[in-house]
Image (cartoon, rainbow, N blue to C red):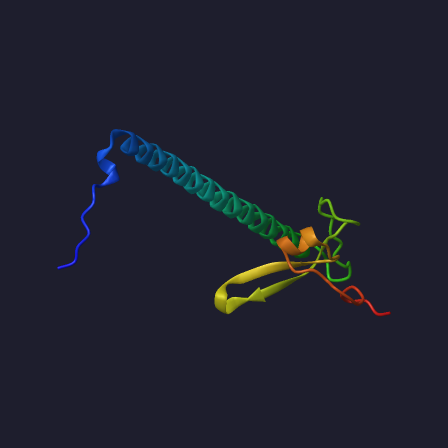
Length: 130
């Protein structure tokens, strides 16, 4: 049997200290990366929760405002506060009953508003003609 026998470098005390030091450095880096990944995950979930809450508040506001308007008086919504250009407001609702989904449709389009809810892209406002 051809086997090569040699002295293991781990038997040297200096070698084991280097291996232990490298192992500790790699372990600390891995733990830090895990903590950072968990923090980023929960931060993204929190942002999604806040946007969902804003969307539900807009739907609730729209439902209340349309409930108290008379048939002869058209619905007028107060603009929502956002960093986007102009002052967007709710112009309608998208409802999908099969999956229990309700989102407001906002009057203008921007990157921030699209993260919250669907927006009107083109054309006149509802119940108006050009």
